[in-house]
Length: 103
Image (cartoon, rainbow, N blue to C red):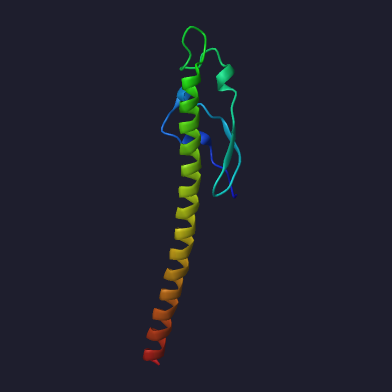
């Protein structure tokens, strides 16, 4: 769907804690993401050189944040386009009425 923004702009984390690297594709109900941060020895979730199964929760939470952010942006864009159309229609109506009264 449309232009895919940078993942970092969609999660509340920065730097190494932004675990997901790119959106492959998405729609209203799904998102596919890619990352290699789980292989990074400097991954901030590592302890004793390992990631644990519990860390999958953070990857999942960030995936949900990305998907929610993408859906929110789509809704805002749709709302903005609808508002622009309504404003243009209203403006056109006001101009038409004003012009016809002046005649």
